[in-house]
Length: 116
Image 1 (cartoon, rainbow, N blue to C red):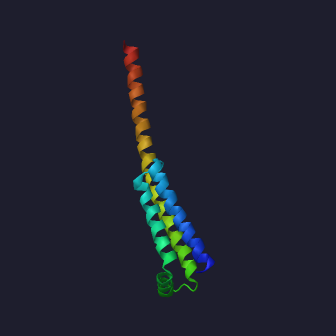
Image 2 (image 1 turned 120 degrees about the vertical axis):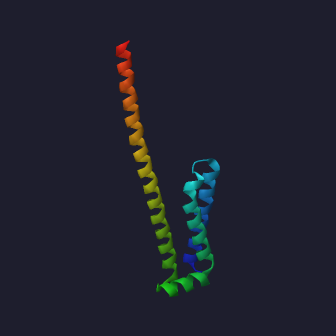
Image 3 (image 1 turned 180 degrees about the vertical axis):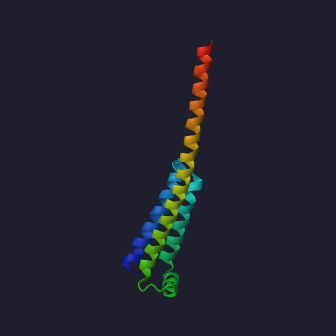
């Protein structure tokens, strides 16, 4: 077993344990943790099953199979960033709409108070 493989296994296990712990503590919602869990499991499988990693690297044309492992990790991180960007955009729009509704209610309340 090469040092890179050992490092990748430890790293994958660390991510998996960390995400499960954050879910358990309630600091990370399950819906947001799915991509993290999927990436940790895929990285762990590819780290432990060297033959699969070699076969995929050969099929894709990557000369150094552990580099493929880090490429997969990078792609998962890009997916996670995209996922959170979509969520932030949605929250931003909802926040703007809520602020507008509060401003309308505040104006109506002020007018009502003056009319009394």
